[in-house]
Length: 548
Picture 1 (cartoon, one colour):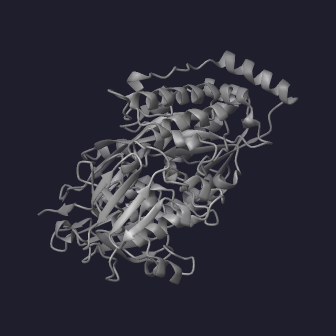
Picture 2: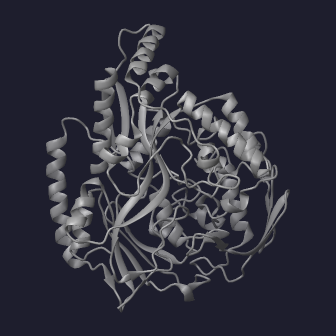
Picture 3: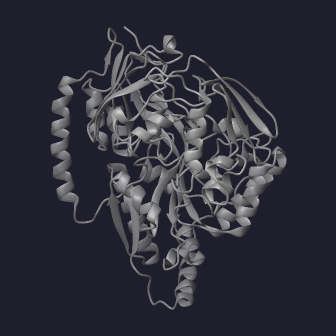
């Protein structure tokens, strides 16, 4: 899943204007912070800040972590993650799994916020919407293990032929296309969340755009949403496990991408938790705040555009760029945030293999920086393309202080090492997603975070049919090995296929992994029970509480 604002850039010539704007924004936010409080024991309420506006809260169409953070608190699927990061019952109270199908028994006390029961029909409707080719859901490929999903998505069969059905109101049957060793772990993902058909149709295609255009079946309900400014989530009294929920209110009091503003809000007692950027880690330490670190499980990377007409579709140019990049330098000198690690592969080190971690069983070939070889490849590429010099490349990014540093690093690196001129295209996160989907870039700074606990969650991104394959990379050999990984129940065969995929990624450079992501953050001492984990919404305040 895409991380909002993970890597961003700065438009040259806009520094003074942006600086004045940020100063004014900081003043307004800090003035407003006098009205907020980080924690309140009596009310069991907390105030937090987000870095960006969630692009949308329609679980059928969402692709980013900010939207998933909100939807994961206000809605729930068949399964969810517990306090220890394990899969646990959600709307489904039990299930049976075989090679051919999965049968879910839904709990009768799962309710929508309008008081109606959550039924198997709500899942059937939502899943059919995701697979309907006229909807073009960005995460449709995650449902490929379902019977006929690919044929439905390719308009070869009607959506009624999708392998999901309501046996009765509280029994959901899922027929599989092939044996699937990871399918249960998919069911906690937002794309598999239920949607009530009658309510969805009443919103006239604006489902999830406003508070009143969304139904809730999770621990909290969204009761206020001032776009670009604030959100309020309150405890859902109809949630089936409401007795286990301590917080009465999660107030998103601020939405600001500025790291120092958020740290100042925390220091002034206005927000209860703040993630630190490169420029605020040292500030927090100097102020005597207790720093916590967390391995977030994602991979930061640079997408290359493989579409016709983009020089980044030439393998030797991609290889040259990879040969002048040093992941150790990038992590330690540029990112400089505790928890980040060098990335030598697109498959991060937390992923499991057969008996140990995948990276230990199948260590990647480490490509060491080699400027001489990089320049030779560049010369060969220009000759093959009949170019005296490369055209200016566009680097698409999202705005943020940390991201500005990252964009400037790549801008300088490619110019100084390879003579490539780079223009930074800085956009709001929503517009960034639109331009990335449309292919309006040569390079994109991005991050991918896991959707479920299997290496497929990363490998699938480069499959030729995946809508999230922003660079439109196509490699028949990659697709062939991915099918083996996806379709086998034998773990040894699956991990062997993943190793072949890893070789292709390193050799063909469809994208350039830059770092395994981590997080340094500070948390109010009276806020307890916050869960940080690789999978699911993060941070997860579902079972948090305020102590005296």
